[in-house]
Image (cartoon, rainbow, N blue to C red; front, side, top):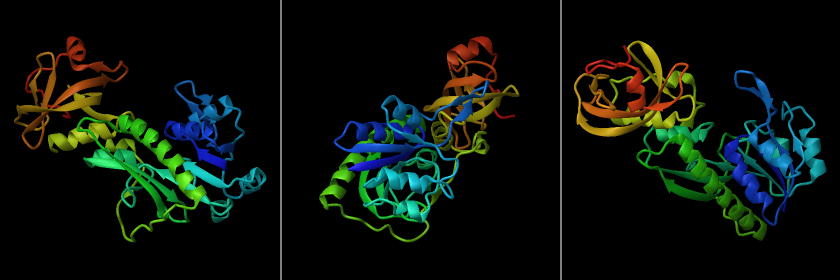
Length: 309
Protein backbone atom coordinates (compact mmCIF):
# COMPACT_ATOMS: atom_id res chain seq x y z
CA UNK A 1 0.00 0.00 0.00
CA UNK A 2 0.99 3.62 -0.54
CA UNK A 3 1.22 5.17 2.92
CA UNK A 4 1.32 8.72 4.23
CA UNK A 5 2.73 8.62 7.77
CA UNK A 6 1.95 11.25 10.40
CA UNK A 7 4.02 11.25 13.59
CA UNK A 8 6.44 13.31 15.64
CA UNK A 9 8.22 11.84 18.72
CA UNK A 10 10.50 8.88 19.44
CA UNK A 11 7.48 6.67 20.13
CA UNK A 12 6.46 6.87 16.45
CA UNK A 13 9.86 6.01 14.96
CA UNK A 14 9.66 2.17 15.30
CA UNK A 15 6.34 2.23 13.44
CA UNK A 16 7.80 4.29 10.61
CA UNK A 17 10.91 2.11 10.50
CA UNK A 18 8.81 -1.05 10.36
CA UNK A 19 6.75 0.35 7.49
CA UNK A 20 9.84 1.53 5.64
CA UNK A 21 11.31 -1.99 5.83
CA UNK A 22 8.07 -3.67 4.76
CA UNK A 23 6.56 -4.32 1.34
CA UNK A 24 4.57 -1.09 1.71
CA UNK A 25 5.63 2.25 0.23
CA UNK A 26 5.87 5.25 2.56
CA UNK A 27 5.35 8.10 0.09
CA UNK A 28 5.45 10.99 2.55
CA UNK A 29 5.79 11.91 6.21
CA UNK A 30 4.02 14.68 8.10
CA UNK A 31 5.63 15.81 11.35
CA UNK A 32 5.43 18.74 13.74
CA UNK A 33 7.67 21.73 12.97
CA UNK A 34 11.23 21.84 14.32
CA UNK A 35 11.48 23.27 17.84
CA UNK A 36 14.18 24.95 19.94
CA UNK A 37 15.72 22.47 22.39
CA UNK A 38 17.98 22.82 25.42
CA UNK A 39 19.47 25.82 27.16
CA UNK A 40 20.87 27.16 23.90
CA UNK A 41 17.47 26.72 22.21
CA UNK A 42 18.93 25.02 19.15
CA UNK A 43 16.32 24.35 16.47
CA UNK A 44 15.97 20.55 16.37
CA UNK A 45 14.08 18.24 14.05
CA UNK A 46 11.59 15.84 15.66
CA UNK A 47 12.73 12.19 15.66
CA UNK A 48 10.26 11.14 12.95
CA UNK A 49 11.52 13.83 10.59
CA UNK A 50 15.13 12.86 11.28
CA UNK A 51 14.42 9.22 10.41
CA UNK A 52 12.50 10.17 7.27
CA UNK A 53 15.30 12.38 5.95
CA UNK A 54 17.88 9.67 6.64
CA UNK A 55 15.79 7.32 4.50
CA UNK A 56 14.97 9.77 1.68
CA UNK A 57 11.28 10.03 2.51
CA UNK A 58 9.68 13.41 1.68
CA UNK A 59 8.81 15.39 4.83
CA UNK A 60 6.09 17.99 5.34
CA UNK A 61 5.79 20.15 8.47
CA UNK A 62 2.76 22.43 8.27
CA UNK A 63 2.30 24.76 11.24
CA UNK A 64 -1.39 23.96 11.01
CA UNK A 65 -3.02 20.90 9.54
CA UNK A 66 -6.30 22.79 9.12
CA UNK A 67 -6.61 25.64 6.63
CA UNK A 68 -3.30 24.75 5.00
CA UNK A 69 -2.24 22.98 1.82
CA UNK A 70 -1.95 19.66 3.70
CA UNK A 71 -4.95 18.14 1.93
CA UNK A 72 -3.56 19.21 -1.44
CA UNK A 73 -0.21 17.57 -0.62
CA UNK A 74 -1.94 14.36 0.51
CA UNK A 75 -4.02 14.22 -2.66
CA UNK A 76 -0.85 14.59 -4.75
CA UNK A 77 0.80 11.76 -2.81
CA UNK A 78 -2.30 9.63 -3.50
CA UNK A 79 -2.02 7.29 -0.49
CA UNK A 80 -4.07 4.14 0.03
CA UNK A 81 -4.00 4.82 3.77
CA UNK A 82 -2.83 7.41 6.27
CA UNK A 83 -1.09 6.08 9.39
CA UNK A 84 -1.06 8.35 12.45
CA UNK A 85 1.23 7.71 15.45
CA UNK A 86 1.53 10.46 18.09
CA UNK A 87 1.35 13.22 15.49
CA UNK A 88 0.08 15.78 17.97
CA UNK A 89 -2.50 17.50 15.80
CA UNK A 90 -6.25 16.92 15.36
CA UNK A 91 -7.06 15.94 11.79
CA UNK A 92 -10.01 17.56 10.01
CA UNK A 93 -12.69 15.43 8.38
CA UNK A 94 -11.39 16.02 4.85
CA UNK A 95 -8.03 14.44 5.74
CA UNK A 96 -9.65 11.56 7.66
CA UNK A 97 -11.38 10.63 4.42
CA UNK A 98 -8.59 11.48 1.99
CA UNK A 99 -7.32 7.92 1.46
CA UNK A 100 -9.00 4.72 0.27
CA UNK A 101 -8.68 3.07 3.70
CA UNK A 102 -8.97 6.33 5.63
CA UNK A 103 -6.73 7.01 8.65
CA UNK A 104 -5.64 4.50 11.26
CA UNK A 105 -4.02 5.36 14.56
CA UNK A 106 -1.61 3.49 16.84
CA UNK A 107 -2.85 4.36 20.35
CA UNK A 108 -0.91 3.22 23.42
CA UNK A 109 -3.77 2.04 25.62
CA UNK A 110 -6.48 -0.59 25.78
CA UNK A 111 -9.28 1.51 24.32
CA UNK A 112 -11.70 2.81 25.43
CA UNK A 113 -9.57 3.31 28.53
CA UNK A 114 -7.18 6.26 28.49
CA UNK A 115 -8.31 8.19 25.48
CA UNK A 116 -6.19 11.30 25.13
CA UNK A 117 -2.64 12.59 25.10
CA UNK A 118 -0.78 10.66 27.81
CA UNK A 119 -2.13 7.10 28.11
CA UNK A 120 1.21 5.51 28.99
CA UNK A 121 2.01 7.84 31.88
CA UNK A 122 -1.48 7.61 33.36
CA UNK A 123 -1.50 3.82 33.24
CA UNK A 124 1.64 3.87 35.41
CA UNK A 125 0.49 6.75 37.61
CA UNK A 126 -2.72 4.86 38.36
CA UNK A 127 -0.87 1.65 39.19
CA UNK A 128 -2.37 -0.43 36.38
CA UNK A 129 -1.06 -3.97 36.03
CA UNK A 130 -1.54 -4.16 32.27
CA UNK A 131 -1.86 -1.93 29.23
CA UNK A 132 -1.31 -2.35 25.51
CA UNK A 133 -1.76 -0.92 22.04
CA UNK A 134 -4.97 -0.41 20.08
CA UNK A 135 -4.99 0.04 16.30
CA UNK A 136 -7.99 2.22 15.59
CA UNK A 137 -9.82 3.52 12.53
CA UNK A 138 -9.89 7.25 13.15
CA UNK A 139 -13.09 9.27 13.24
CA UNK A 140 -13.81 12.86 14.27
CA UNK A 141 -14.01 11.98 17.97
CA UNK A 142 -11.10 11.82 20.40
CA UNK A 143 -9.82 8.24 20.13
CA UNK A 144 -13.38 6.97 19.68
CA UNK A 145 -13.03 5.13 16.35
CA UNK A 146 -13.56 1.44 15.69
CA UNK A 147 -10.75 -0.79 16.95
CA UNK A 148 -9.09 -3.14 14.45
CA UNK A 149 -6.51 -4.86 16.62
CA UNK A 150 -5.44 -4.93 20.29
CA UNK A 151 -2.20 -6.19 21.79
CA UNK A 152 -1.85 -6.37 25.59
CA UNK A 153 1.22 -6.34 27.82
CA UNK A 154 1.89 -6.39 31.55
CA UNK A 155 3.30 -3.45 33.48
CA UNK A 156 6.09 -4.46 35.82
CA UNK A 157 6.08 -3.46 39.49
CA UNK A 158 9.07 -1.16 38.99
CA UNK A 159 8.60 -0.40 35.30
CA UNK A 160 8.69 3.31 34.47
CA UNK A 161 6.68 5.13 31.84
CA UNK A 162 9.93 5.70 29.91
CA UNK A 163 10.57 1.94 29.79
CA UNK A 164 6.93 1.31 28.88
CA UNK A 165 7.18 3.81 26.02
CA UNK A 166 9.94 1.74 24.45
CA UNK A 167 8.10 -1.55 24.92
CA UNK A 168 4.81 -0.29 23.54
CA UNK A 169 6.45 1.41 20.57
CA UNK A 170 7.78 -1.98 19.46
CA UNK A 171 4.48 -3.75 20.14
CA UNK A 172 2.68 -0.98 18.25
CA UNK A 173 4.93 -1.30 15.20
CA UNK A 174 4.23 -5.03 14.91
CA UNK A 175 0.49 -4.54 15.47
CA UNK A 176 0.43 -1.80 12.83
CA UNK A 177 1.89 -3.99 10.10
CA UNK A 178 -0.47 -6.81 11.06
CA UNK A 179 -3.42 -4.43 10.85
CA UNK A 180 -2.38 -3.27 7.38
CA UNK A 181 -2.33 -6.88 6.23
CA UNK A 182 -5.86 -7.36 7.58
CA UNK A 183 -7.10 -4.21 5.87
CA UNK A 184 -5.45 -5.00 2.55
CA UNK A 185 -6.81 -8.56 2.50
CA UNK A 186 -10.31 -7.48 3.51
CA UNK A 187 -10.15 -9.54 6.71
CA UNK A 188 -10.15 -6.65 9.19
CA UNK A 189 -12.92 -6.76 11.81
CA UNK A 190 -13.94 -3.33 13.11
CA UNK A 191 -15.06 -3.39 16.74
CA UNK A 192 -17.05 -0.41 17.91
CA UNK A 193 -16.00 1.11 21.21
CA UNK A 194 -18.65 1.21 23.93
CA UNK A 195 -20.15 4.59 24.62
CA UNK A 196 -19.48 6.37 27.89
CA UNK A 197 -16.78 8.09 29.90
CA UNK A 198 -13.84 5.71 30.36
CA UNK A 199 -11.30 8.23 31.56
CA UNK A 200 -9.31 10.87 29.74
CA UNK A 201 -5.51 10.74 29.77
CA UNK A 202 -4.82 14.47 30.02
CA UNK A 203 -1.42 15.94 29.22
CA UNK A 204 1.24 15.55 31.88
CA UNK A 205 2.32 18.77 33.61
CA UNK A 206 4.82 19.84 36.26
CA UNK A 207 1.92 20.33 38.67
CA UNK A 208 2.01 16.54 39.16
CA UNK A 209 5.63 16.56 40.35
CA UNK A 210 5.58 17.44 44.08
CA UNK A 211 5.38 14.32 46.26
CA UNK A 212 2.85 14.24 49.08
CA UNK A 213 4.46 11.86 51.57
CA UNK A 214 1.10 11.43 53.32
CA UNK A 215 0.08 9.21 50.41
CA UNK A 216 0.78 5.48 50.44
CA UNK A 217 4.17 4.09 49.47
CA UNK A 218 2.59 2.44 46.42
CA UNK A 219 0.97 5.69 45.23
CA UNK A 220 4.24 7.59 45.53
CA UNK A 221 6.15 4.78 43.81
CA UNK A 222 3.62 4.98 40.96
CA UNK A 223 4.11 8.75 40.80
CA UNK A 224 7.88 8.40 40.49
CA UNK A 225 7.56 5.71 37.81
CA UNK A 226 4.86 7.56 35.89
CA UNK A 227 6.71 10.88 35.67
CA UNK A 228 9.93 9.32 34.39
CA UNK A 229 11.74 10.74 32.30
CA UNK A 230 9.66 13.95 32.30
CA UNK A 231 8.76 15.99 34.26
CA UNK A 232 10.08 13.84 37.19
CA UNK A 233 8.69 13.66 40.73
CA UNK A 234 10.13 16.15 43.22
CA UNK A 235 10.47 16.73 46.95
CA UNK A 236 12.68 18.76 49.29
CA UNK A 237 15.49 17.51 51.51
CA UNK A 238 16.64 19.98 54.14
CA UNK A 239 14.53 22.59 52.31
CA UNK A 240 16.37 22.03 49.02
CA UNK A 241 14.45 20.79 45.99
CA UNK A 242 15.47 17.43 44.52
CA UNK A 243 14.17 15.28 41.71
CA UNK A 244 13.35 11.68 42.58
CA UNK A 245 14.19 9.51 39.60
CA UNK A 246 13.90 5.97 40.90
CA UNK A 247 12.37 4.20 43.90
CA UNK A 248 11.44 0.72 45.12
CA UNK A 249 9.01 -0.42 47.78
CA UNK A 250 10.73 -1.28 51.08
CA UNK A 251 9.85 -3.93 53.66
CA UNK A 252 10.87 -1.55 56.46
CA UNK A 253 7.99 -0.15 58.50
CA UNK A 254 7.87 3.58 59.00
CA UNK A 255 6.44 6.17 61.33
CA UNK A 256 5.85 9.81 60.43
CA UNK A 257 5.05 10.55 56.77
CA UNK A 258 8.12 11.81 54.91
CA UNK A 259 10.57 10.85 57.67
CA UNK A 260 13.96 9.33 56.85
CA UNK A 261 14.17 6.01 58.70
CA UNK A 262 17.42 4.68 57.20
CA UNK A 263 20.37 6.72 55.93
CA UNK A 264 23.06 4.02 56.02
CA UNK A 265 24.30 4.23 52.42
CA UNK A 266 20.66 4.38 51.32
CA UNK A 267 17.61 6.59 51.76
CA UNK A 268 14.45 4.99 53.10
CA UNK A 269 11.41 7.22 53.65
CA UNK A 270 8.26 6.58 55.65
CA UNK A 271 4.98 7.16 53.81
CA UNK A 272 1.47 7.94 54.92
CA UNK A 273 0.30 4.33 55.14
CA UNK A 274 3.13 3.29 57.47
CA UNK A 275 5.05 1.59 54.69
CA UNK A 276 8.36 2.83 53.32
CA UNK A 277 9.87 3.72 50.00
CA UNK A 278 13.58 3.49 49.21
CA UNK A 279 14.95 6.25 47.00
CA UNK A 280 17.45 4.71 44.61
CA UNK A 281 18.31 7.67 42.35
CA UNK A 282 17.85 11.40 42.87
CA UNK A 283 19.14 14.72 41.63
CA UNK A 284 19.76 17.99 43.45
CA UNK A 285 19.18 21.24 41.56
CA UNK A 286 22.12 22.03 39.31
CA UNK A 287 23.66 18.60 39.91
CA UNK A 288 23.81 15.32 38.01
CA UNK A 289 21.50 12.40 38.66
CA UNK A 290 23.11 9.98 41.13
CA UNK A 291 22.40 6.99 43.31
CA UNK A 292 21.45 7.47 46.97
CA UNK A 293 24.84 6.34 48.30
CA UNK A 294 26.65 8.97 46.20
CA UNK A 295 24.13 11.64 47.21
CA UNK A 296 24.70 10.91 50.91
CA UNK A 297 28.47 11.34 50.51
CA UNK A 298 27.94 14.99 49.61
CA UNK A 299 24.75 15.78 51.51
CA UNK A 300 24.08 15.35 55.21
CA UNK A 301 20.68 13.74 55.73
CA UNK A 302 20.00 12.82 59.33
CA UNK A 303 17.66 10.11 60.59
CA UNK A 304 14.23 11.68 61.35
CA UNK A 305 14.72 14.34 58.68
CA UNK A 306 11.30 14.96 57.17
CA UNK A 307 11.15 15.37 53.40
CA UNK A 308 8.88 17.94 51.85
CA UNK A 309 9.08 20.39 54.76
